Image 1: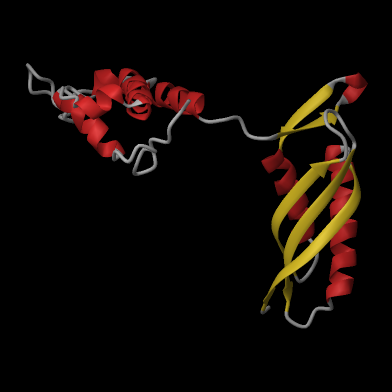
Image 2 (image 1 turned 30 degrees about the vertical axis):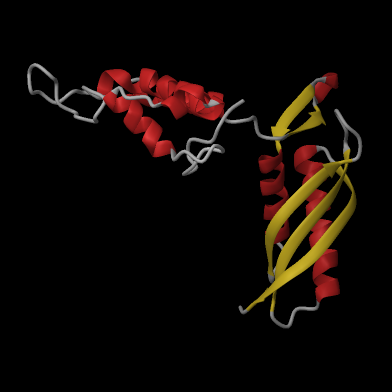
Length: 195
């Protein structure tokens, strides 16, 4: 089980900032000792503190050395260590499996696929692509997929003609850049813009 430290409150109702204070001052109350959410959050906080611990001087955030009064310099690899802890807490981004050369597979994030297809939609004059959702026709490696794309049209532009042009552009980009065949391309006009 993982808890969201970025949220203001744990599922048990305890504010996350109070856990940081309890660690900083070495005080842990009965609720924290017995609450599974607080215990999981404390473990996550301790991992973060271990990754950054040699830069803080003490737990109150004092950035001067305790004995010398000199400013403590963070280690050169601090960003890498902090990001490693953060990445360990995040679930992996959804992926799309594509066939690669010689039968090898290509694993690409849904976000990257959506960016390519939105850019193709944006290439149509008078269209601004918004959200993009790709659905693989079959689980695993597939070259067939369906697409839902929401767009904004320039005022006065005929929607059917714009939809045809966007479908053609995203199908061409999907085939050329991703090796995908888009079986169905649903266009949803969600906004109108001027110029």
